[in-house]
Amino acid sequence: NAGVTQTPKFQVLKTGQSMTLQCAQDMNHEYMSWYRQDPGMGLRLIHYSVGAGITDQGEVPNGYNVSRSTTEDFPLRLLSAAPSQTSVYFCASSYQRAGGSEQYFGPGTRLTVT
Amino acid sequence: ILNVEQSPQSLHVQEGDSTNFTCSFPSSNFYALHWYRWETAKSPEALFVMTLNGDEKKKGRISATLNTKEGYSYLYIKGSQPEDSATYLCAFMTTDSWGKFQFGAGTQVVVTP
Image (tube, rainbow over all chains, first blue to last red; front, top):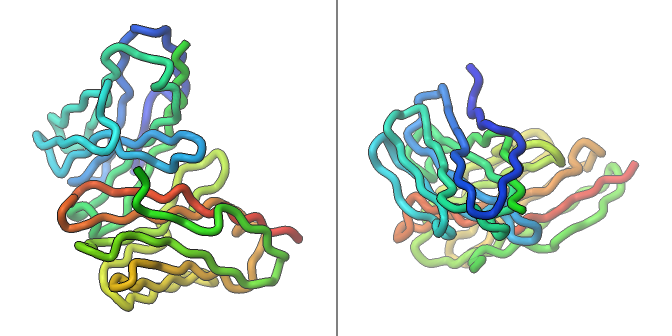
């Protein structure tokens, strides 16, 4: 049982490049989410999903796309990287409907956009 | 925009002392409040999930209370130990924004021997 995994752990992109941050969980969790963490800002929700085939926007969705084709995977796509997207990205999942049970966080991806 | 506020931003505690800090949130349309513990270079780990007004939860020396009518939750650490040093985050969700957690900026706790 690996829990929530994220790849890569570190990434450096040039402005305008695109990439996908991978997130997977092996706990059969319905709810998955992506956050970014910036100094003094706490964790801010980018996108979330309440089940396969269902996604919705969080607080800061601009510049990011997601899809949820399987229960296990929830990739985050940066369409055209900008320096403002330099951040640490966390993926999380929870078993029951959102709010009713704790979220399990992945180890994070540190992204730098130059 | 952070509708959830945590205070203080940081605090220093002597080993063995007890401490507490606050998470404040809008009192309308409450659905759930979570507390997480976040150690440096690690990922946040859940401490408590609280959904009912008056909830009191306890895990070892750490406990939490919830008042949804006035919009606050307290986290208490009894007999602080150096391993309690971490940032403590609260996250809340309302019924009209179901699925969307809002996190506070956290309270950083440093316990010195």
